[in-house]
Image (cartoon, rainbow over all chains, first blue to last red; front, side, top):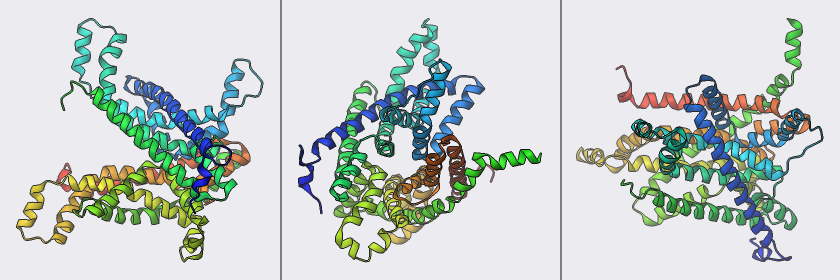
Length: 235
Length: 236
């Protein structure tokens, strides 16, 4: 039933393929988490700006993406991403066929999903900062730039870390959906291997164990970070 | 005017909308079975998790750990492809359910939601003030009566918002069952996208339906919150 001998490294087994696939999953997760955080900052900024149009766009984006299955968003970007990039390139006078590689599509798709969750976390932690602090910083003559980096950011990071940890776990698990686009990460690798070896149970359990390891280890990392960032912050 | 109506009827969004709509009943069917089943089992698992029987509590804790640590897609594939490849399962009565993508989906969704739900309900049960349990005991309530009249009603109404979140996640999770060849809304949308290469139109058609389903779910949870929190209503 469970064929251990198929998981050895080298030509006889799938061990090294799975190692590469695990690294690919990690890479996609980290890239899309980073891009997602960047998008989330823009979204939060659009929401707290006293501007009805930007707020509407940001709210529309988060509501739609969070109310629609992740798989549907991935299909949209997988089937439609090329056309969008090509039409943008056309504006700049480039008329040749462009094909995005699977990693780019995967990163963008997961980032678009992850950003909606991150933005809620970041917004809540921004609102947790009392207004008095920003006023105090302004009274000290700090400009907008240094208020953002010296007063707001450190506190937002501290407040947001537990929430961001949750978003990371969600993002990590969402990368399994990327297998439908053909990017060889853990899930895709397990499907390929089980099709070759006719032993789905072995490779799917391997995939489950790998995901479990990734989530557990990254959970530990975030715990450590939380302790680190809440130094001098009596709870 | 008639020309305008004709052009709407011939537009891709309009056609796709009804195509995707034909998958709505399959999506709802998945939810109708897995959500109530998941609710009941999650309550039982939460009670087991907080019970003083160490073995039971530990077993449920590790079940929750494993399910929450792996993607739903792995679970669906494990049940659909994995269990189907084991010979003695193929020969047992289980095969009647496991050969159907629909029942595999229901089983996987239920297993998944039970783990998340149990953790939510555990939070609710553990947040109940001790004095309420003590006053129940002082009135001579038995264990079962205490559970039925005090612990569960308070716990459930406390966790309604977070359980509502889980319900919405479940609506979205049904889309993954389409990867086991079960044709629900996402499966149909995928087919349209692959066939016509008009991803936006199919996305809009399916997206509207999913947003509508989730909107209904939110309203349902809001109604439950209103109904079971009479002390929080503004005018009474």
